Length: 169
Image (cartoon, rainbow, N blue to C red; front, side):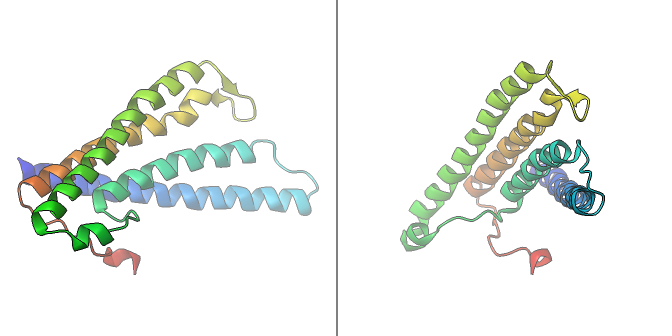
């Protein structure tokens, strides 16, 4: 069961990174078009800024969730490295659990934000403001899942690699 969960979450994290990368590329194209419109055509598109901000909310949230699963978030390990192995393990479990609880908070308060803003329309895009924020509780749920998965793996003695992902070098 644990290996099946790990396989599913690894694939989910890979897809999240792909979606985040696509969002970043699309946002770059939109901002480039906005600059072209402003300085060459003397007419900046009205929808570009809000579209870029909406994409940013989604792709940053997805990349953050993938970062929890893959362990490529920045963290300081000086105290952990100096601690005895048993205490260091407890520190990693506590850290992963706190991250997972932050994901739960994103689900709760991000979900509330979505509900409260669902009826508001972004005029330049014609979509719900709640939809723009929907990436927050989705990413929060994934962060919670990935954080608890990492804590469980640490508790059961599964080796968690902390080195840099070779795809990023």
